[in-house]
Each structure stands twice: as C-alpha cells, then as structure tokens.
Length: 391
Length: 229
Image 1: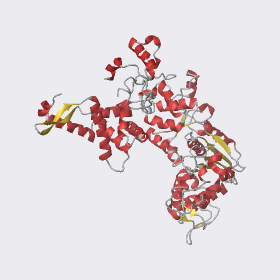
Image 2: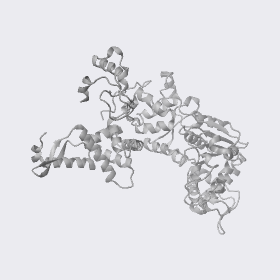
Image 3: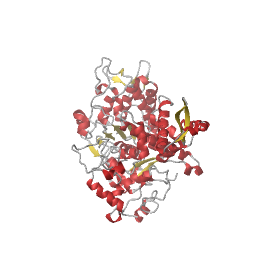
Image 4: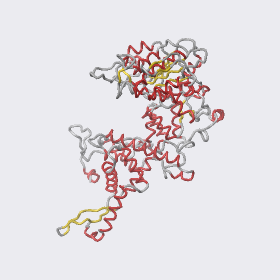
C-alpha cells in the first residue's frame, strides 16, 4: 500500500489530463497530446482530429454488435475494465471513409486489411463493423474463417450435394450469433424462394428470415444448408430498391477459405476447403457479382494452417487461388502504433480517473519505464498489451 | 574470503580465455548491471568509487549470467522465485507462469476494486508485485527447527534462521503447496494466484504451515539449550 499513490513521479503533461473536451485540450497544450479519450462515440462522426484517441462503445450496443468477433484478450480487458474502449486509428478511418463514399449500385468493393501479427487488424475490423451497425446495415460477421476449416468434431455428409460436408455445430453457433446481431432485420426480410428441408418440412416463399434462422438453430443437422440459404437470400436482396438494405460482409482470417484444411474424411484422405458447405457458400458471398454492400476482410496468420509465422502479405497468405478470387480488392495496410498512438495507449493504461490504473508497477510510470516499454514491445499493440497486463 | 585475498593475489592472466564458467579465479570482479552507477559524472565520485573504477580497468570481469538485467522492472526476489519454480532448466515456461500469475492477481483485485463500496476502494491493493512481496513476508517463519543429536536421541531444537533461509522456506512451501495440494485440473498460475492472495490476507495453507512450525518450536522450548551456536 505504500507503493501506490506516491506523488506522481512522471510529470503529466497538461493539468489533470484524461477526460477533457477536445477544444479545451487543444488550447492548453497544443504541442504535446495529453488527451487520449474522445466523447465522440459515433464512428460516423469521427475524423482525423480524433486519430489516436479512445472512444467508448456504448454498453447497450456491446452485446448486440459484438456477440462474437472480438479478440479473446480484448474481451478479457473489457470484462476487467467494465468498458469497451477502441482506439481510432488510420486504417479504420480510411475504411469508413471509403464506405461512406462508395457507389452501392455498382458491384461490391472488397477491402482487405493486412499487417504484421498483433498490429490491430481485427480491432480495425470491429471498429468498421460498429460503424456499419450504427448506420443500420445488415452485418454478416464471421469471427474467424479458420475455425471452420480445423478442429471439427462432427463432419456430416451434406444432404443437398453429394460430395460436400456439413459442419452442424459451427453453423448453428454462427446462426445464433447472427440472430443476436441482426434482430430487427429478421422480421423485415422475406424469402423469395421455397426451401425444402426434408419430405415433411419446408419453408415457403414470403416467410420472414427469422423463421429460417430459428429453424437452423433448432435443427442442427441442416444448419449448414440454412446458412447457405440465408447467404443466398441476403445476396439477392441486398441491392434491392424497395426495402433495400446495405449488406456488410466482415470476414476475419479470410485466408483460411483458400488453402488446406486439417479435416479428414473417413478414409483418412484430406478434405479440400471447397468440399465444405460453409466455405463454399462463403466464397460465393465474397465474389463481387452482387451489389448493394461491401466485403471487408482481414488476413490472419495466427490461426492459419500450413503458413509460416513470418508471412503477413496478401500474396503469401492467400496463395494463388485466393489472390485470384479476391482480385481486385482495396488493400488497407495496418501498421504498428505511431508515437502519438503509443502515447495515447500508454496514457489509457495509466488512467486512474476511470479505473484504478492498469499499470501498477511503480517504475512503469516513470520515463525510463516508458522507454523500456517502447523497446520491449517495438510499439506492437498486442505485445504492449501483454506487457502492461503483468506490469 | 575472496575479498581478503584480493590484496595478496598476484597479477594473473588466464592461458585460455574463460567464458561463462561458474568457478572463477578470485582475481575476477563482479559485473555491474545497474545503469545509475555509470551515469554518475567524474566529479561526484567518492574516493572508493574512483579506486573501484581504476581497478575495473585493469582486472578481468566475470561474464554476466542470463538472468541479470539492467531493466527497471528487475526484481531479485521474483527472479529467485522463478528459478525455484523452474524445472529442467526451462526458464521460459517458469517466467511465463509467473507473469500469468501476476496478471491474474491484478485482474482479480481490479474486479474486487470495482465491486467494492466507495470507502473500501482505496484499501484494495491492485499492485501484483506488492501483493507478492507482502504474501511472501506473511509466509516467512521467524524461528525454525533443527534436528540435533544428544545422548543417542535426536531432538527437534528451535533455532534462529537467516534471512535467506526464511525466504527460501517461504518460497518452497508456496510452490510445493500449489503443486501438491490443489485440484489436478487447475493450471499453475491459477493455483499460485489463489494461494498468494490468501497469504496476502494471512489465510491459506502456507500461512497455516508457518504457524504450525512456530507452535512446534514453542512446544520444544525446553530443548533450546541443546543449541551450541
């Protein structure tokens, strides 16, 4: 108890930095950035002046917008701090400005976020998903495509197509999360085709989408086909002029869709990704032959199979087949923290107005401690987060 | 012993250049990892420090071991604990477990802080290093027992313990308690964080073991005169 609350060893720039209105903050110390939080919680209104600052995702939105899709360490951090704060960074702002100005009567644009491990690709994707959500788009968020190509306990042969395989558990989990995210759309969208599941069950034309999703969640055996049907319906109806909605397809770890899987058939021969129903349907979604929405994808080496750990460029991770399918796309590089962003992150962890500061070690609050953190983490966001967790 | 012999040592250079052995000629000097020592300007050096610097320019210096850092976050007690946890020389795993333990303790305390009413908030200690040091202090025994033979029988005699011995016993008890007496499926960092938090508030099995040792020593007071040192 003696170590805490000693007079601040490092002089904080500006008086009582932390939660300040932007105008006041800019006047007191224009040359050093002491503000790291912004009140602007709406992603649509954020601009370059908010770069490097943290905004809070309103707690009411949190569970509806992000039932899945956030990195696990970030979820732990949200639980500990009781608030979800995201930093406004350049790649996400760039993506959002593209989305604002795109023409939605033309075929879909595909955006690809790439960068080294831990540079913040998934968080930028989640920021963009939050933007799409607040703008009333329908968001199709696949948290990690790699989860669909590995570690599958049950692989059923598909009833619809002879040579394909179904993954009931993954499909039903995803449908459940999809239902949480897009509650209000489920009753508005009507099906345009009749789907027959078994001899006795079918879903008629004109029924709401919600019924289809509920059926997929309850009947686990046909959930992969339900996913395929949902994707098809959304693709057809996205660009429609009457009751039209914009569709955002957000895929994390898109390089898992082309490549190899670790799944094996009963005769021990490997399963190619095309032979999985979920992957097959998702690939059709990523093609740019529909209009009225956008496809935002992230590359990820962390969960990927048979890819070297130093690979991070699109060409290396997607492979030839993947690159040809994704081509043409808008590449968005995600870099490590700049000096301003690092400063902001450091001040966020040091913040003791909102919570007892996270950086508890007395030396981490000094200048040498800060220099050492820069040296150890090389300004890599995830490495810095892990370091600050135990310091 | 080496300090008294240094004046009598003859100037000596090795025939083969020694690299990182653990036994050195007493002629070798210890390395100095702390940065502050080198930042003192020439004028502020005391005569002893000046002499030491001159000596360092002549004598060879032992190679620094891997565990020695000039980092500000270096903690000798924690390094000792990591070494004691280490199995088969795998320090990466041991250090990883300790960092996970510290993080876990910090998270638990921060959650407790958020749930605590306003008056109690300032009392919850969130610094994992402070908790670790305090918990270790609470586990250190004050007096120990030694097995002394007198007249054909062995008696448990209460003896004073050195600081090093006390620290070693506290760490040893903590580690064995976590390894042996917990549920099989919990991970080590979880077990350690639970035990350290309990020791911080003077509960838990390790503190109980310390109290039992004290009670044994108290009950064997009569044999204290068997100690001859």
